[in-house]
Image (cartoon, rainbow, N blue to C red; front, side):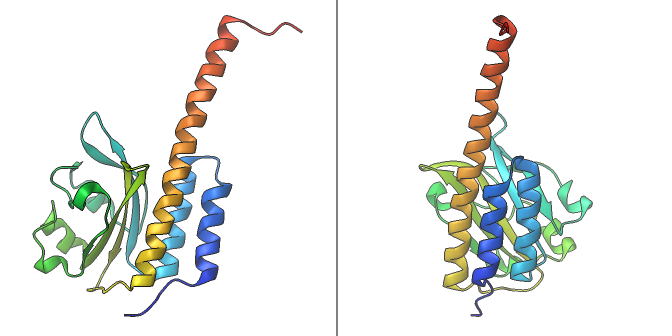
Amino acid sequence: MENRFELSHLKLIVDTVFDANNPTIMGTQFTQLLVSALGVKAASVFVVNPGKDALEILATEGLSINYLNKGPILTDQSIRLPDNLKPVIITDTRNSDRLQYPKKAEEEGIRSIVSLPVNLRGKIIGALRVYHSEPWQVSERDLATLNLLTRYLGMALRYFRLATAVNGVKDTIDDIHPIWL
């Protein structure tokens, strides 16, 4: 198994996450850098929509519009995350029964998928998926790096949610009690 991540890749991706001020831009840059660093077909960052029990795409790189519009990614039918805390590695999609849309994956040319939960304190708030056009035996080091990156994603997504909430409260207070100079 070949290690694909280099320290320079990791540094660039982490800097992108920490320097971002918008979750969509952060996710887009993150997926672009990940695809480039790993030399894979595609990558996607999802966030959980608890009201729909579905994953919604925050950002993606390398997937066709047809594949992206295949239908909802339901949390109980999509790639199962054991105990919702561990990565799922599908080294060959042609030999797996874990896919919600196996025909769409085949049409898209996806042969392997690494799916990692993005969690914060044990609660799943999203997922990172890396897609390859050939069977892929991800190295332990690359898997450890991907796990580390999902932790950074979790912290960033949490920060964006908190910042949005704080700004909403501030706007409400400003509307009720304008500051007089």
